[in-house]
Image (tube, rainbow, N blue to C red):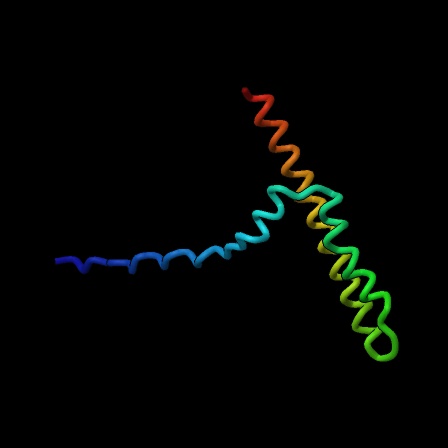
Length: 88
């Protein structure tokens, strides 16, 4: 009898992270609401002095990246909505 090669079943895919609060915000967000959300953070970071100022610069870069990412998500959402309307 020939040996049978049984392969173990593939591992299940890792769980996908879910961020319901972020998803909810993105679904209803506008450019103005993003600016309203991030402006107080910017103001607080601009007010840092001394050794904290260096950390503030890094945090400001993160805020800028976050704003760019959220703006991109808004553009994608708008494109999807246009495509949905066009396909009807």
